[in-house]
Length: 201
Image (tube, rainbow, N blue to C red; front, side):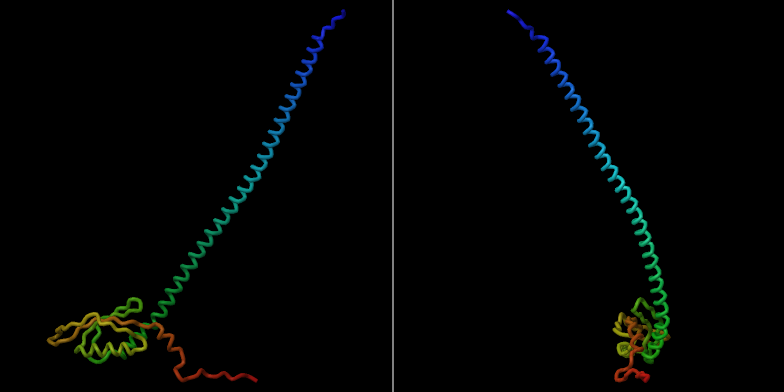
C-alpha cells in the first residue's frame, strides 16, 4: 500500500495564502494612505483658496472702511461749511432786520413811551421802558399787533414807579418779529399785476 505525505503541500498552500493576505493588506494600506494624502491635499487646496478669498475680502473691506472714513470726513466738512454759510446768511439777514426793527419801533411807539432796553432772543423781542400811563402801554401793544413786522405782544409785567417826583408805569413786554415780512415786501401789492414783457416779433 502506497502512502502519500500531504503535509508539505498543505504547508505550501497555507504559506501562499498567508503571502497573498499580507500582499493584499499592504496594497490596501498603501491605497488607504494614498486616499488620505489625496483627500488631505484636496482639503488643503480648498482651505488655501478660502484663505485667499478671505484675505482678498479683508483687503477690500479695509479699502471700503477707508472710503467710508473719507466720506464721513467730507460730510463733516460739508456740514461745517453749511453751518458757517447759515451763520453768515443769518448775520447778513439780521443786519437788515435790525434796521427794519428800529424803524418799525420808531413808527409804532406812541408818544409818552420811553424805551430803556431792547433784547432779541431768536425771533422774540423783549421791550422794557416807562410809560406816562397804563393806557399808553395798551396803545403800544395795539400798535405792535397791527404792525406788519411784529406780532403777538405779550405783557410780562407793569408796575407803578416814581422818577423825579413823577409817577410812571414801568413795563416789560415781549413781541415776536415775523421774518416772513421781509420776503412779503418783495411780493406785488394786491390788485396789481407784474409788468408785461413785450414779445419780439
